[in-house]
Image (cartoon, rainbow, N blue to C red; front, side, top):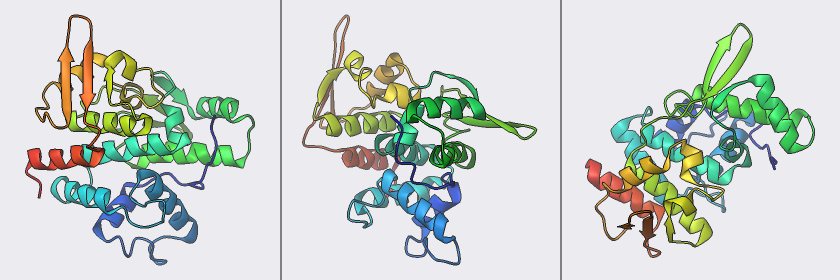
Length: 257
């Protein structure tokens, strides 16, 4: 069920994330953003988990994302993969999108589907629609990750849910650790993974065999164990490790300091 449209009329913008990662102290400066934009950015940052429940900077995640940004710049596909995954885990608006099948949707069709799940049409639903489409249009999440490619025809906009982006193995493992920490389940088959509300297959628009292939290249046995039998692919995670450890492994493999 859709609820809690808290971003106002604004989609997330690439420039906002760059501004926050570059100078987090001035990101909320009155001269840079209007009051409503500041509120929107604040709620996005909370759902991305760069701000914690105490409204403080989540230094562990911030430090990792800052390093990725400095090394790979704002167009980093890894950075935006992490942003989108966290939005899906924390925002009903973005997690709702994952349940729609791959297709091209007109703006009116998305609104119609949102109204069905929300229960009625009002300005909050319209705001949610604008936030969703705006995020896809003004960040690499839409066109680069192929989560929602926005096109214009005259005054009309449509969004293509395409999929097929080659997410790196550490993004996939990050998503799986996020799910494990939410469910407290650290051992499962790929088939069991696909049945969960927050499975990476639906969020990232990838298939079981792609996940299996990518996980097999990760050699860190402290974070990941795999058992492959004729008809099962069993994933074993370390319940003493976290998704931050996955990101630290990624930084180490990429030589990012």
